[in-house]
Length: 624
Image (cartoon, rainbow, N blue to C red; front, side, top):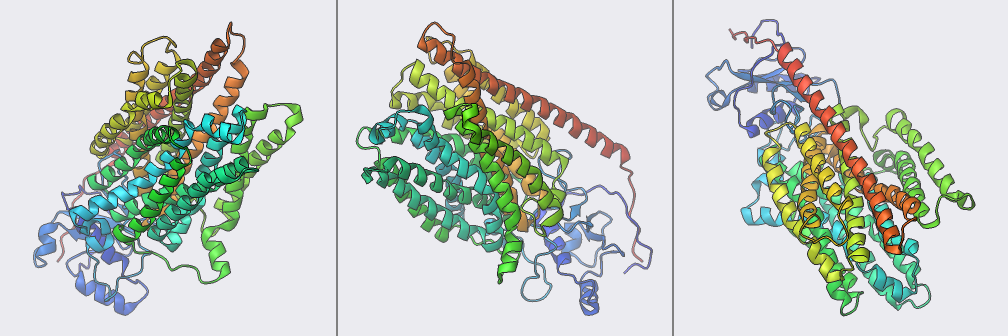
């Protein structure tokens, strides 16, 4: 050990393999500074390293790691942060890239030491995805990505069945039928907030399997509602609302598994990109198969889907690796209530439900004085939001959303995603209405018109996975918001009699690039901002923003449509005026997203220039 007084220095990070940095930071996490024997053992094992009173750990380059007797001047620093949530790693990641400079979520100073003393865990033990055979890793990725695919399939399978379901249950009011879609989206967008925390506590793999099983049961009940001759419609809506809890469980826990199974890098970026690519594909596949089953008997859409979901629940237990839990499950009721943040969860979910219900129900009954319950729900929801933030920041010991750990970059990304995906929801719904009511396409023909979306989305996801670590995340967001903006403009100004290939085909190629660039970028930034034990919370937050913005955006658009769909010469003119009014709102949301992303890009460029200006090269003192 050097007897010199340690001092902090700014150094240039040499090229060091990622597993090495994580392995030695993991070893530091098993060091107990309050135990004299542990301290002595740790000093003896790391005698070639310098560390000071603030536990600045200086580790040699790969040559030094393999030859303990040698001493290299190239070193990199692990600096223990004052925060309980994360450890700052000096020099990790490209400046301003989508990968944060914070210590990756796999390095967790609170994780208990591995068995066998304070020996370092291998990278494959820390990241289970690295040790899988190729065939199993492919199967593992497919099973996880299907959580996003089935979520969107559950939405798309109903869109083209609304007329048939209405005829079966003698329901013709468009507002009443809209709840078959809105009820599902409502529970998906709100219960995600809580389900990620349950995965943090009880294990992501277990919760993923439970989510698939729950989804299967209530999807089957949706199909069986046709046998209820008296209250079949009520039973169907009830089953659809409860079935939305299934994907609310599967999506965040699937994403959390990716976040914990892989270290930051190309592999993780590609996994997140493929996950996001399943969103447009799921909707189109769901719509296509529902159109086919409608030719025979529409309940088979739900029966077949329920069987697939039950199979997936079993495949999770077989092919998904177990992610080591970083905490023991609560053993008492008090510990459970504290761990799940019950008060914050109830207030937060209730607030989101009330606001969402008010905007979507207003489309059905209108903003009228004799429908005062709509105003009351909206007001109560808005008033409960600040209460939720107060609970999370001042009251909760283990908040659902650790605001203190979130950076300004996360805020910009979340704002961009909210604007972009709100625009996407409007684009998808009103393009479907445009095809169905103005161009009079059959269900199968409409599915064919949407068919370019999956292929374009897959290409976008691969491209995004490649560029995420090479360019600033803000640049990725500017690009994605621009794609959203251009895609929705093409639909908003498309003439009814125009050929499909002129504008609507082009917009079907462009919009997926907005989706599949924004979602992976936001997911990676959020995952890197929170430690390993909070990956469920990270996934919950990003999915809450995505799904809630889609549902709320449709509520806003429905209100606009209701206010402007009159004054035309014909009924078709009125429909077109209403649809275009809603799509203009989508243009406004996408434009706002572009503006926010440009500000984000300017901020990141400024921050990088400031870091370069303040950086001062320094050399390390030699050990003697």
